[in-house]
Image (cartoon, rainbow over all chains, first blue to last red; front, side, top):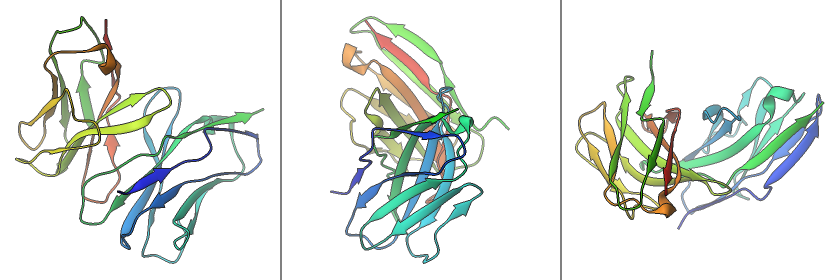
Length: 114
Length: 111
């Protein structure tokens, strides 16, 4: 069975600092995609960033970037210049190519401190 | 552009009652999903429909049924609600291996 692990239930960071949220995806597959979603207090699920496992280059989207270590099956999210609006739950969600099942990690609650 | 629309947004049921959560998307997506979110549990997949005419079980299907009515609509039915089904329910849709687009969620309380 494929499992997704987010080992940090809660984290906090000072405004303008950098924080890294971890996610590991235990799979025997080689072709998969990984997504990070943000869920602010409004409860709406918002896509943050997407990473394709076959790509060597880490994905970047403005202040958000991925540190993808394929051999370690690690897919961490780095948030630079943290802002108060980044306060939210963050979920990683992988999907294996050719399937349709997006499975979510248990989430990391991030609080950005003023 | 409405995206994914879920109804109702709030519902209170008594144990044993039945209800259907409705979901519709207007993005011409092939795949649709139902998740539940409990405190500290993240999102757990209940059922999904890879394409019109197909449905499959997810991680926690017991106590639920689904219907993919057409390409746009995917409903979730609780035949006999139990307190353990108190949760926030999310519908989502996607094109394969693209990102999920979520509805706003439906809060269900079973007394």
